[in-house]
Image (cartoon, rainbow, N blue to C red; front, side, top):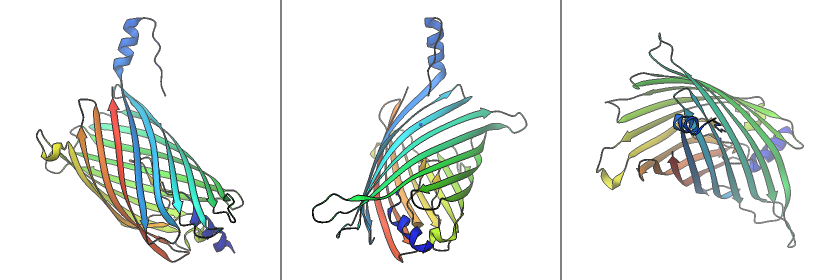
Length: 324
């Protein structure tokens, strides 16, 4: 019975941030404004599922806005809306999932003399609201199938040396899943990360491990511990690069991860299926001194262990970012 309850949640759970400066004079206001480096980003993604018994397509859009103050710290806040369309052929079949994600992040930097670099203390928080519907019958509207709240807290400590050739960080994410009519369950995640610049500052490689433990064995059909390795390589180009590119990169994931929290993308993978690999290619373009455009295409593989349903997902992601 418990497996049945959790398998039902698997079918409908979703796929995947403040400041004012007041001065006493115009000179003070201008100085305070110059101290902040602000950036706003809009993003959108469209995707489709291949071979899934339940899901058909995905759409998401959102924004981030944030700022950094004199290399001392900063903040980010954001919002993202996600909609997953299901393959609802018959009444009672999964039809639509709507997910609203609210994100808030803050960070503080320090520069210990004995470390020879920058130490960053960061805290991210997410609040996510999921609502899933099933298809109605006899021309009637569908009905609510699942209604849930997801909360995530993600502290991270990181270090980068003064030469910007090596970086380390360690994050812990605690996620609580609370769906009406079901028992709560939690996910605990550790993400040790190492980055380095092979061949000079025009290249950056990042390796991150995902080690995730679930509080309930039957949430993922008995597989309560998953581990994965994510590798990212980014190369920055000089002037007159091919296609006008500013940078290009490739990301790859091997292993298994379930209900992961990605601190780089500020995404919680609330999709209640196990990701079993993926690859993505991206490129970015400078559209002036303060504006940039990034395009990414990706392919991921998943398994729903309860339904014995293996499927894949292909997507296109776009963001536009402007700083001031």
